[in-house]
Length: 178
Image (cartoon, rainbow, N blue to C red; front, top):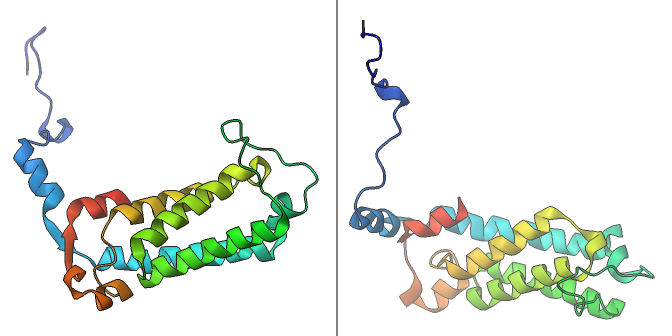
């Protein structure tokens, strides 16, 4: 039994784990090769869902704030970005669907991912009354896809250019998606 006033050490289970260690250890963790399969799964399934969501925007009442509204409420940082005439809005939504499909099949992957991220961000920024929070998530995922080499396997780009084909990616690519 400790004496009064003596410091009692914390039990080992309550101590935080040691911090990351040396920078080389961090680099080793970030750049160690990991299997590309999870990235391929997210590259195929994520944009396929985004394509269905964007097609649903054009075919369901979600389009009303963009197409049928008599008043458009823009965000304060993007008053210059407006929905425009209905044919232009439908073309924008169709371009988002095409970009999502291109990302999913890995065709012109980086260009399509950037176009999808910008298209989704513009869709969110156009109309404040049509706010849907997962559209932000879709735009963020598309931007992350533009930064990671998820087209290295099971993609048209890897088939057309065998030099980009790979079975592993750096671990930081998976960390971005977590």
